[in-house]
Image 1 (tube, rainbow, N blue to C red):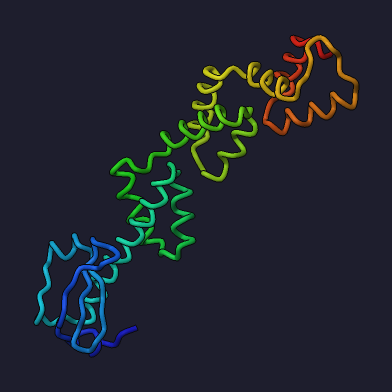
Image 2 (cartoon, rainbow, N blue to C red):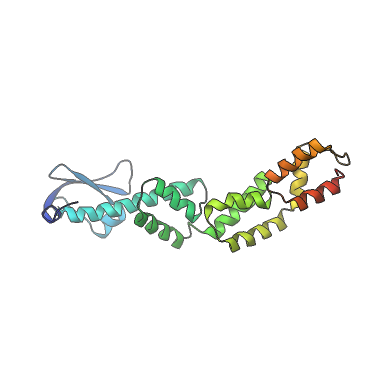
Length: 218
C-alpha cells in the first residue's frame, strides 16, 4: 500500500512505445526505469507524452484499466473456442486470479455486447449434446447443472429439444450401436447390463421399456 507521499510523487515519462506482443497495449517507461502498460483505448482517451510527469496514483489507475483489459482478453480467448455460460466464464476468470470487481466489469460488458447469453448458450449446448452424444434428459440436466442456469429455462429448452430429437429414436440408436437384434428376447444378465447402460445415458425407464416392447426384447 502506497503512503500519501508516494502516491503524489511524480516521475517523468522517458519513452512510449507500442507492445510488440500485444498491439493494443502501450508501454510507458519512466525516469526511474520502471514501466507500466496502458490499454490503447485508455491511451486514446487521455494521451500521454514523453516529458509528462505522472504520479503513482495515476499509474495505479492505468494498472486497474490494464487488468480489466487483460480480463477481457482472457474472456475473448475462451469464447474463441466455444460459447460459455455466464457462470462458467466467471469461474474460468476466477481461476486466472482476476478479482470479483474485474470479473463483474468484464461480464457486464460481454452481456451488453451479447457475447454472453445464457439462453443462447443453453440452446446450443442442449442441441449439440443430444445430436453428438445421443443422451437423454437426465444426463443432459446433469451436464447443465454446473452452469447454474434457470430451471425454467432448462425445462423449456429440454422439452423443445426432445420434440426435435425423438427420445425413442435416440434409445433405438443405442440399441443398434450395441448390435441388439429385434424380436430376440434378452436374458436377465443382458437386460440388466443394457438397462444400466441406457440409464447412464440419461433415459427414463418408461421410455426404455416402451422401446424394449416395440423391439420385442421383453
